[in-house]
Image 1 (cartoon, one colour):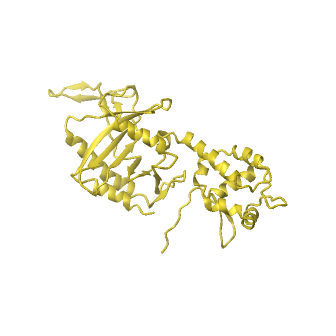
Image 2: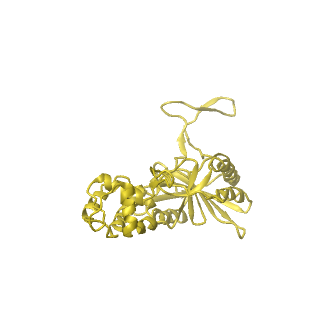
Image 3: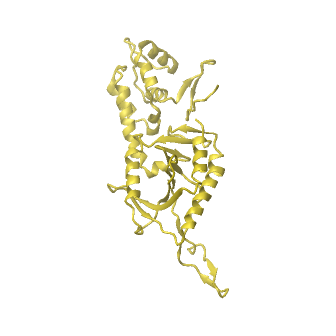
Length: 310
Protein backbone atom coordinates (compact mmCIF):
# COMPACT_ATOMS: atom_id res chain seq x y z
CA UNK A 1 0.00 0.00 0.00
CA UNK A 2 1.04 3.61 -0.48
CA UNK A 3 3.29 5.43 1.98
CA UNK A 4 1.33 8.66 1.45
CA UNK A 5 -0.09 8.45 4.96
CA UNK A 6 3.43 8.73 6.37
CA UNK A 7 4.25 11.69 4.15
CA UNK A 8 1.01 13.36 5.23
CA UNK A 9 1.87 12.87 8.90
CA UNK A 10 5.29 14.45 8.48
CA UNK A 11 3.78 17.40 6.63
CA UNK A 12 0.55 18.12 8.54
CA UNK A 13 2.13 17.80 12.00
CA UNK A 14 4.44 20.72 11.13
CA UNK A 15 1.51 23.10 11.60
CA UNK A 16 1.53 25.63 14.43
CA UNK A 17 -1.79 24.16 15.58
CA UNK A 18 0.03 21.13 17.00
CA UNK A 19 1.11 21.18 20.63
CA UNK A 20 3.68 18.66 21.81
CA UNK A 21 4.38 16.68 24.97
CA UNK A 22 7.29 14.35 25.75
CA UNK A 23 7.19 11.38 28.10
CA UNK A 24 9.89 8.99 29.28
CA UNK A 25 8.83 5.39 29.85
CA UNK A 26 10.14 2.35 31.67
CA UNK A 27 8.97 -1.24 31.21
CA UNK A 28 8.46 -3.81 33.97
CA UNK A 29 6.92 -6.93 32.41
CA UNK A 30 6.32 -8.45 35.85
CA UNK A 31 3.88 -5.72 36.85
CA UNK A 32 0.15 -5.68 36.12
CA UNK A 33 0.69 -2.23 34.60
CA UNK A 34 4.05 -2.79 32.86
CA UNK A 35 4.57 0.82 31.81
CA UNK A 36 5.74 3.67 34.02
CA UNK A 37 5.89 7.14 32.49
CA UNK A 38 6.75 10.68 33.46
CA UNK A 39 6.09 13.89 31.60
CA UNK A 40 9.26 15.79 30.78
CA UNK A 41 9.46 19.52 31.50
CA UNK A 42 11.57 21.94 29.46
CA UNK A 43 12.99 25.24 30.66
CA UNK A 44 11.83 26.76 27.37
CA UNK A 45 8.85 25.27 25.50
CA UNK A 46 10.39 26.25 22.17
CA UNK A 47 12.99 23.49 22.64
CA UNK A 48 10.38 20.75 22.34
CA UNK A 49 8.67 22.42 19.38
CA UNK A 50 12.00 22.68 17.57
CA UNK A 51 12.79 19.05 18.33
CA UNK A 52 9.39 17.90 17.05
CA UNK A 53 9.81 19.75 13.77
CA UNK A 54 13.36 18.48 13.33
CA UNK A 55 12.16 14.94 14.00
CA UNK A 56 9.37 15.27 11.42
CA UNK A 57 11.83 16.49 8.78
CA UNK A 58 14.39 13.80 9.59
CA UNK A 59 11.79 11.02 9.68
CA UNK A 60 10.56 11.98 6.23
CA UNK A 61 14.03 12.30 4.73
CA UNK A 62 15.86 9.40 6.34
CA UNK A 63 13.06 6.91 6.98
CA UNK A 64 9.92 7.52 4.91
CA UNK A 65 11.75 8.51 1.72
CA UNK A 66 13.97 5.42 2.03
CA UNK A 67 11.13 2.88 1.94
CA UNK A 68 9.16 1.78 -1.10
CA UNK A 69 5.79 1.09 0.52
CA UNK A 70 3.74 0.28 3.59
CA UNK A 71 2.68 -3.35 4.06
CA UNK A 72 0.63 -5.24 6.62
CA UNK A 73 2.68 -6.62 9.49
CA UNK A 74 3.49 -10.28 8.90
CA UNK A 75 6.23 -10.90 11.45
CA UNK A 76 8.98 -10.17 8.94
CA UNK A 77 10.49 -6.90 7.76
CA UNK A 78 11.96 -6.42 4.30
CA UNK A 79 13.84 -3.25 5.35
CA UNK A 80 12.45 -1.52 2.25
CA UNK A 81 8.96 -1.24 3.66
CA UNK A 82 7.18 0.02 6.75
CA UNK A 83 4.84 -2.39 8.52
CA UNK A 84 1.28 -1.43 9.43
CA UNK A 85 -0.51 -3.03 12.36
CA UNK A 86 -3.97 -2.02 13.57
CA UNK A 87 -4.00 -1.07 17.24
CA UNK A 88 -7.07 -3.30 17.66
CA UNK A 89 -5.08 -6.34 16.52
CA UNK A 90 -4.90 -9.00 19.22
CA UNK A 91 -1.11 -8.89 19.05
CA UNK A 92 -0.93 -5.39 20.57
CA UNK A 93 -4.41 -4.23 21.62
CA UNK A 94 -4.15 -5.09 25.32
CA UNK A 95 -0.62 -3.75 25.73
CA UNK A 96 -1.42 -0.62 23.71
CA UNK A 97 -4.30 0.22 26.07
CA UNK A 98 -1.94 -0.08 29.04
CA UNK A 99 0.64 2.03 27.20
CA UNK A 100 -1.81 4.87 26.52
CA UNK A 101 -3.23 4.66 30.04
CA UNK A 102 0.26 5.16 31.43
CA UNK A 103 0.65 8.30 29.32
CA UNK A 104 -2.79 9.65 30.26
CA UNK A 105 -2.13 9.26 33.99
CA UNK A 106 1.49 10.42 33.79
CA UNK A 107 2.95 12.89 36.28
CA UNK A 108 6.20 14.85 36.20
CA UNK A 109 7.68 12.70 38.95
CA UNK A 110 11.01 11.31 37.81
CA UNK A 111 11.16 7.58 37.06
CA UNK A 112 13.70 5.63 39.09
CA UNK A 113 16.10 3.37 37.24
CA UNK A 114 16.93 2.98 33.57
CA UNK A 115 14.62 4.60 31.02
CA UNK A 116 13.62 2.31 28.12
CA UNK A 117 12.46 4.99 25.71
CA UNK A 118 10.36 8.07 25.14
CA UNK A 119 7.06 9.10 23.59
CA UNK A 120 6.38 12.30 21.65
CA UNK A 121 2.67 13.14 21.42
CA UNK A 122 1.33 15.73 18.99
CA UNK A 123 -2.15 17.10 19.68
CA UNK A 124 -3.82 19.37 17.07
CA UNK A 125 -6.23 22.18 17.89
CA UNK A 126 -7.73 22.49 14.40
CA UNK A 127 -10.61 20.36 13.12
CA UNK A 128 -9.57 17.78 10.55
CA UNK A 129 -6.06 17.25 11.91
CA UNK A 130 -5.35 14.05 13.83
CA UNK A 131 -3.28 13.30 16.95
CA UNK A 132 0.01 11.52 16.30
CA UNK A 133 2.42 9.65 18.54
CA UNK A 134 6.11 8.96 17.88
CA UNK A 135 7.93 6.34 19.95
CA UNK A 136 11.66 5.78 20.26
CA UNK A 137 12.93 2.74 22.15
CA UNK A 138 16.26 3.97 23.49
CA UNK A 139 17.44 5.40 26.79
CA UNK A 140 17.77 9.18 26.26
CA UNK A 141 19.69 9.68 29.51
CA UNK A 142 23.44 9.27 29.30
CA UNK A 143 26.59 10.16 31.23
CA UNK A 144 29.25 11.84 29.12
CA UNK A 145 31.93 11.13 31.71
CA UNK A 146 32.30 7.38 32.13
CA UNK A 147 34.88 4.59 32.29
CA UNK A 148 35.96 5.18 28.70
CA UNK A 149 36.15 8.98 28.59
CA UNK A 150 36.21 12.18 30.62
CA UNK A 151 34.31 15.19 29.27
CA UNK A 152 34.86 18.85 30.12
CA UNK A 153 33.10 22.09 29.18
CA UNK A 154 34.44 25.63 29.14
CA UNK A 155 33.02 27.98 31.78
CA UNK A 156 32.64 31.77 31.66
CA UNK A 157 36.32 32.22 32.51
CA UNK A 158 37.34 29.96 29.63
CA UNK A 159 38.37 27.28 32.11
CA UNK A 160 37.60 23.60 31.62
CA UNK A 161 35.18 22.14 34.13
CA UNK A 162 34.30 18.45 34.48
CA UNK A 163 30.82 17.46 33.30
CA UNK A 164 29.31 15.06 35.82
CA UNK A 165 25.60 15.68 35.24
CA UNK A 166 23.41 13.35 33.22
CA UNK A 167 22.68 14.47 29.67
CA UNK A 168 19.44 13.96 27.73
CA UNK A 169 19.85 13.08 24.05
CA UNK A 170 16.77 12.90 21.82
CA UNK A 171 17.27 11.08 18.53
CA UNK A 172 16.11 12.22 15.11
CA UNK A 173 14.79 8.77 14.21
CA UNK A 174 11.63 6.98 15.28
CA UNK A 175 10.88 3.28 15.81
CA UNK A 176 7.13 3.44 15.31
CA UNK A 177 4.31 5.92 14.81
CA UNK A 178 0.71 5.61 16.03
CA UNK A 179 -1.85 7.42 13.90
CA UNK A 180 -5.57 6.99 13.28
CA UNK A 181 -5.89 3.57 14.88
CA UNK A 182 -2.79 2.03 13.32
CA UNK A 183 0.85 1.55 14.19
CA UNK A 184 3.49 2.14 11.51
CA UNK A 185 6.73 0.38 12.42
CA UNK A 186 10.14 0.84 10.82
CA UNK A 187 11.62 -2.11 12.71
CA UNK A 188 10.57 -4.73 15.25
CA UNK A 189 11.47 -2.98 18.51
CA UNK A 190 7.76 -2.64 19.27
CA UNK A 191 7.65 -6.42 19.70
CA UNK A 192 9.80 -6.08 22.82
CA UNK A 193 7.88 -3.06 24.12
CA UNK A 194 4.52 -4.82 23.86
CA UNK A 195 5.77 -8.29 24.86
CA UNK A 196 4.73 -9.91 21.59
CA UNK A 197 6.59 -13.11 22.40
CA UNK A 198 3.91 -13.94 24.96
CA UNK A 199 1.07 -12.85 22.69
CA UNK A 200 2.45 -14.76 19.70
CA UNK A 201 2.39 -17.95 21.77
CA UNK A 202 -1.37 -17.43 22.20
CA UNK A 203 -1.75 -16.74 18.47
CA UNK A 204 0.13 -19.96 17.69
CA UNK A 205 -2.11 -22.03 19.96
CA UNK A 206 -5.26 -20.47 18.48
CA UNK A 207 -4.02 -21.08 14.94
CA UNK A 208 -3.20 -24.74 15.64
CA UNK A 209 -6.66 -25.23 17.14
CA UNK A 210 -8.23 -23.60 14.08
CA UNK A 211 -6.31 -25.84 11.67
CA UNK A 212 -7.08 -28.92 13.76
CA UNK A 213 -10.76 -27.97 13.72
CA UNK A 214 -10.97 -28.43 9.96
CA UNK A 215 -11.36 -32.21 10.47
CA UNK A 216 -8.97 -33.03 7.62
CA UNK A 217 -6.47 -35.20 9.53
CA UNK A 218 -6.30 -38.96 9.98
CA UNK A 219 -5.05 -38.37 13.51
CA UNK A 220 -5.68 -34.84 14.75
CA UNK A 221 -3.85 -35.47 18.03
CA UNK A 222 -0.69 -36.35 16.12
CA UNK A 223 -1.01 -33.16 14.10
CA UNK A 224 -1.52 -30.98 17.21
CA UNK A 225 1.40 -32.59 19.01
CA UNK A 226 3.76 -32.07 16.07
CA UNK A 227 2.44 -28.57 15.32
CA UNK A 228 3.02 -27.46 18.92
CA UNK A 229 6.72 -28.20 18.37
CA UNK A 230 6.91 -25.79 15.42
CA UNK A 231 9.47 -23.23 16.58
CA UNK A 232 8.49 -19.93 14.93
CA UNK A 233 5.31 -18.57 16.50
CA UNK A 234 5.39 -15.52 14.22
CA UNK A 235 4.70 -17.76 11.20
CA UNK A 236 1.10 -18.13 12.38
CA UNK A 237 0.45 -14.37 12.17
CA UNK A 238 -0.33 -14.73 8.46
CA UNK A 239 -2.78 -17.62 8.76
CA UNK A 240 -5.86 -16.63 6.73
CA UNK A 241 -9.25 -18.23 5.96
CA UNK A 242 -8.48 -18.50 2.23
CA UNK A 243 -6.13 -21.45 2.60
CA UNK A 244 -7.95 -22.93 5.57
CA UNK A 245 -11.05 -23.14 3.38
CA UNK A 246 -8.99 -24.62 0.55
CA UNK A 247 -7.98 -27.69 2.54
CA UNK A 248 -11.57 -28.18 3.74
CA UNK A 249 -12.52 -28.99 0.15
CA UNK A 250 -11.57 -32.60 -0.67
CA UNK A 251 -10.50 -31.88 -4.26
CA UNK A 252 -8.48 -28.81 -3.27
CA UNK A 253 -6.95 -30.72 -0.39
CA UNK A 254 -5.66 -33.38 -2.78
CA UNK A 255 -4.11 -30.66 -4.96
CA UNK A 256 -2.35 -29.22 -1.91
CA UNK A 257 -1.15 -32.68 -0.86
CA UNK A 258 0.20 -33.36 -4.36
CA UNK A 259 2.01 -30.03 -4.44
CA UNK A 260 3.63 -30.52 -1.02
CA UNK A 261 4.05 -34.31 -1.39
CA UNK A 262 1.99 -34.94 1.74
CA UNK A 263 0.37 -38.35 2.31
CA UNK A 264 -3.41 -38.80 2.28
CA UNK A 265 -5.37 -41.70 3.74
CA UNK A 266 -8.13 -43.64 1.96
CA UNK A 267 -10.67 -40.98 2.98
CA UNK A 268 -8.62 -38.18 1.45
CA UNK A 269 -7.47 -36.77 4.80
CA UNK A 270 -3.90 -35.75 5.64
CA UNK A 271 -1.99 -38.72 7.08
CA UNK A 272 0.74 -36.57 8.59
CA UNK A 273 3.24 -38.31 10.87
CA UNK A 274 6.45 -36.22 10.84
CA UNK A 275 7.58 -32.72 11.86
CA UNK A 276 8.71 -32.01 8.30
CA UNK A 277 5.25 -32.77 6.93
CA UNK A 278 3.58 -30.57 9.55
CA UNK A 279 6.07 -27.79 8.84
CA UNK A 280 5.26 -27.86 5.12
CA UNK A 281 1.52 -27.68 5.73
CA UNK A 282 1.80 -24.89 8.31
CA UNK A 283 4.01 -22.79 6.06
CA UNK A 284 1.61 -23.31 3.17
CA UNK A 285 -1.45 -22.32 5.23
CA UNK A 286 0.40 -19.24 6.51
CA UNK A 287 1.32 -18.06 2.99
CA UNK A 288 5.01 -18.89 3.30
CA UNK A 289 4.88 -21.44 0.46
CA UNK A 290 3.62 -20.81 -3.07
CA UNK A 291 3.55 -22.60 -6.39
CA UNK A 292 4.64 -20.74 -9.50
CA UNK A 293 1.80 -21.08 -12.01
CA UNK A 294 4.19 -21.07 -14.98
CA UNK A 295 7.01 -23.34 -13.81
CA UNK A 296 5.01 -25.26 -11.16
CA UNK A 297 8.00 -24.86 -8.86
CA UNK A 298 7.16 -24.74 -5.14
CA UNK A 299 8.64 -21.57 -3.65
CA UNK A 300 9.13 -20.30 -0.12
CA UNK A 301 8.91 -16.62 0.84
CA UNK A 302 9.68 -15.04 4.21
CA UNK A 303 7.64 -11.95 3.48
CA UNK A 304 4.57 -11.60 1.30
CA UNK A 305 3.79 -8.43 -0.59
CA UNK A 306 0.73 -8.03 -2.75
CA UNK A 307 1.58 -5.99 -5.82
CA UNK A 308 -0.73 -3.26 -7.04
CA UNK A 309 -0.55 -3.58 -10.81
CA UNK A 310 -2.90 -1.51 -12.95
